[in-house]
Length: 341
Image 1 (cartoon, rainbow, N blue to C red):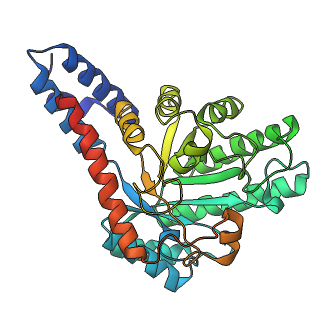
Image 2: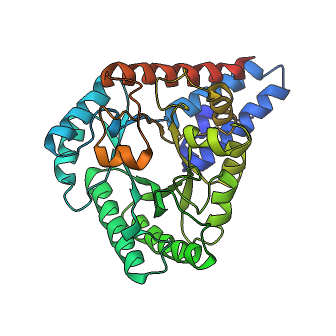
């Protein structure tokens, strides 16, 4: 068998590398005589060519994203040791992406962006005006991501984010799928990927599980991925293992949020992080892993009401973020050593 180190130049893409890593790891597990060398080569391949970016959501640090808010969140994210910041584009009209790009460059951080649509920009609406407004808003957000040098726009970008009083209609889902297909082309032309966040039943009625997201994507053209979030999975999924495998097997796992059941310090709630991180490792996931936590002491009053953040589970953003960075990296390192067993 040719050494992994000798074939790196002919392996072009991240998905090819991911599959190669899985094949080599599985081969090594079944071959005692070459196990150590193959596992070492596989781990080195993944480390050098598929660096996973660990990030923090901007709302960990501030509820506003003007110049002062951008500085606070970007500098706080870097100080905590993260590689990436996810910036929520709550004000797509007024957001200064050129300023954000300069600050990101000065602090050496990668960036993604997210948002949740509103009733006036709901892609599932029967009102063509609302759907058109949603498409326009998302195009503006895609442009912001491109200007900042990012490559992912994620979140609840397929419907309004909020409690619906009825299931989504077939027409509404079709409206959303058509709009996302159009936006996927717009995004791809600018080097941006769309990733659709799977949220709980109180924040969208389109889909609430990984399998539901895959069914939705059956009606979408273009490269659009699924965004899993441990907080929402804890409410809607049967476990933390199968959804990761289902979505990854379809080639659609593109983004991950890490949050505990109460949105507080990681490891102090009911989320089964051990299984979740093990599943991410099993499928050789190498995309962004972003910590998300909210407190009404930090986020805006409007978003606090939308997300139902009535309690303050933390006050110190810097301590919370530093703890999360250590927690995520330690967990990923620990599950990685299973390959040596």
